[in-house]
Amino acid sequence: GTRIPFTSIAFPLPVDGGLVPPPVDSGPPSIVWHAVLVAGDDSITAFDNARDTVRGLFLAEGVAEDDIIELSRDRAEQVGGVRDTSVENIATAMMDLGVGDGDGCVVFMTSHGSRTGYYITDRDYLTPPRLDQILDEACGDRPTVVLISACYSGVFLADVAAPNRIILTAAREDRTSFGCSAEATYTYWDGCLIDNFYSAMTWSGLYENVQKCIEDKEAGGFTPSYPQVSLGADVADLPIFDRVAP
Image 1 (cartoon, rainbow, N blue to C red):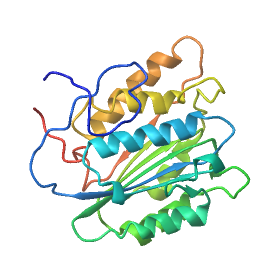
Image 2 (cartoon, one colour):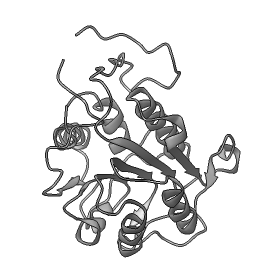
Image 3 (cartoon, one colour):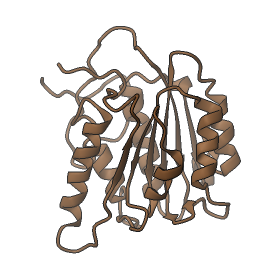
Image 4 (spheres, rainbow, N blue to C red):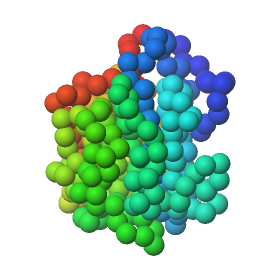
């Protein structure tokens, strides 16, 4: 269909400057989604840029503003309900979502990373076992989508994978990801996720398109980061926010 800009809310357009198509109105959602969006480092603006843009994309898809909690390590960003990023604050935010029957969880996290886990500036790492515990407590066996943008973020797959979970990571457990520079608007993976957010009906299809985008960005000059995916058996074909083909 024709691509038109949104007028009801304001958020940055994708990196390529393209207009974003409106979501298809398919009636009441089959799943009520709740989201936690996390920027773990304030040394560059790219992480908070991505957090803010992803928030806009989720709102445009029909995720209610009251069902989104954001965290940032940048004190200047901690306004309008945005909380300080720490492991325990992430856990508290997930519980504060109040996920119930018929609901789903989405977690977007962007920062640096290591083989230990997800890096939070001047704080402890969020490790894979701890994230698994947080998701168990906050989301249970409800549909859960986890988007982790960080070097070595593939380390989360082994511990966090579950039949009800979809996990997309920016890199394999032994690889770095790219684009963490002061002049970058987004990291490579965040930019590919944002640019391709409307390119597929399902999370698995989005992974494939983001993977191709990363391959194109890294071609010729970078050791491949090899973005990873885990598709739980119960949610392997899960649509993106009840998205349906026009």
